[in-house]
Amino acid sequence: MTLKLRCDDYGFECKFILDGEKTVGTIEKLRNHFEEEHGIDYTIEAVTQMITNRGHSLESIRK
Ligand SMILES: [Zn+2]
Image (tube, rainbow, N blue to C red; front, side, top):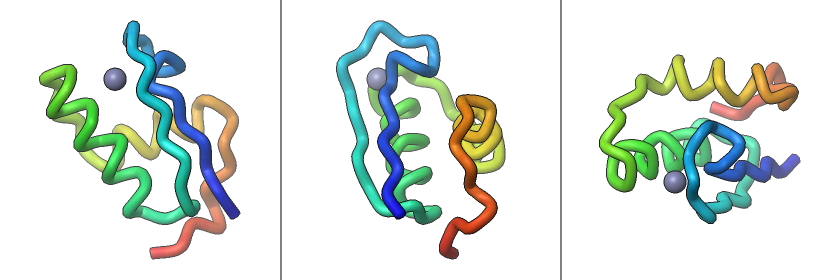
């Protein structure tokens, strides 16, 4: 399963799109992007919640 995450879906005016496997690593990449590009240090839990709030199902996520 893959996951496509668009930064502008999360409230930023940003063209960053992350396309990856549905794993914690992909969520971590988005988290790192928020920190490096936008200066916001979210926790993994917060980013995971944001992604599920966007309608992505993450219950089958691989650790
Ligand atoms: Zn961004």
